[in-house]
Length: 226
Ligand code: DC
Image 1 (cartoon, helix red, strand yellow):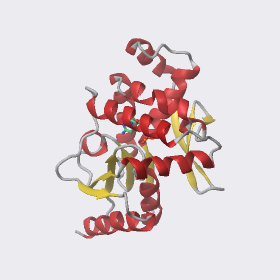
Image 2: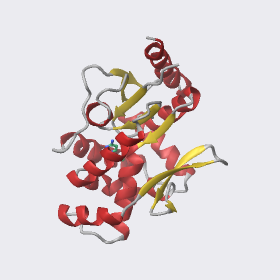
Image 3: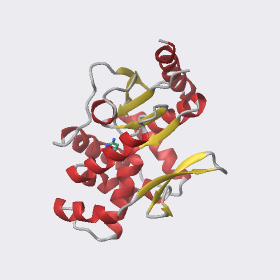
């Protein structure tokens, strides 16, 4: 059966990654969390004490930043590796979320990440979620989905995720971080978050997780069989 690429874009906390991951699992496709790559670059910059107000210093520090994904057979999940170290947990923490939109707006960072992402999608059979997947990374993706959800449902979802990881920020803190990032991600000069006209919009505010997955799977099967 022919393989397709599936692009899932949208604002933070709409359930893009969890949906993309499950869709990929059921189709036997590769799941790539592009946000994890920007988070890992950000963690690298923070660890190297790079002055984030300098795009030149961020660009220079990219030379020592190698990002990979590794399958964890115990969890069945793909985990993010930064310079050989598993940083899957660390990159989800609030101190990284607070800086990631600054780093993700730097042109050199985007060029490097997009090149790596396009390479991973070359053989098709990839489900990738992010902000610029349909517009920049895979403009030829057979299926493009734009996910959105109400502020409250997004914040509640993220709060539960963070609590599972031992962090307990308030709903207000999470909402503030989403609003900051949404604004920065959709107004930046370099490949801002946009909804491409051909994208199918899915509002996940009142959808159960299984329904989110089934919607995308149904659309994917139509494209695969087309
Ligand atoms: O999906 P996420 O919330 O983990 O993404 C973290 C940040 O990375 C997000 O605020 C914007 C940036 N990002 C991006 O600029 N382009 C992408 N394709 C994915 C994420």
